[in-house]
Image (cartoon, rainbow, N blue to C red; front, side):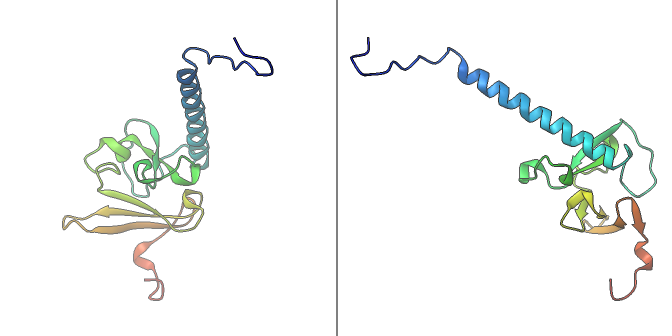
Length: 146
């Protein structure tokens, strides 16, 4: 029993830390879902990879900078790709044969450059956007920009 002039500190509710952790995880999932939805809306719900291909497995949000390397869950770090090019196909982002690089400070909200690994192991430019969804033909660049 507390002495005179002291304040009784209530005991924490049993399991409160676990409940708090679950609440934070639920909030993080809600933020992730909101950002992925915003990225898909920005990309028109279509695969943003510039080359013609048969999209398989639905659309997914791929990180430009991988989350394990410090990439955040903001829509400027997410790009919509079909599941085949994102992670399922023999040539994919997760397989490290495809690479996407932002061309501006706004990340995926701006223009992107798309690279594919060649047989020699080097990455080669496939296409570059001048604006979201507007491609610049790589072979037609002037000598100053090359």
